Image 1: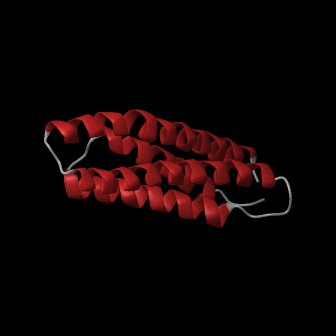
Image 2: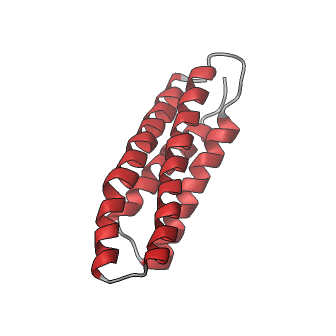
Image 3: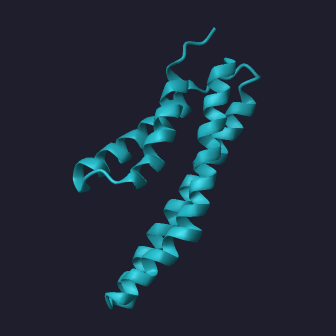
Length: 126
């Protein structure tokens, strides 16, 4: 893997890991307080919590996979496909959320890693 691709993948992976912690540890308490203030039923809050925390775990998992792929790239292994899939998924989700709900700065959490991963995947192998 080229040095530039490795740097992009590591940067995006670290952003995903950091944002997974922020998502679950900082984001949920804020949302939970707002839901409580609106008297949202407990079963609905529990369902939202499950999905919210699953998203945090998924972000952590994808970040760890990206770091593993970057480290494994020193062996004869092409990381373009899995890195590209992660990038396209993040770009598609961020863009779709912006289209459906209007752009919010929070979508940068999806768009920046998506651009980094997709850019890394598009760099030609040597």
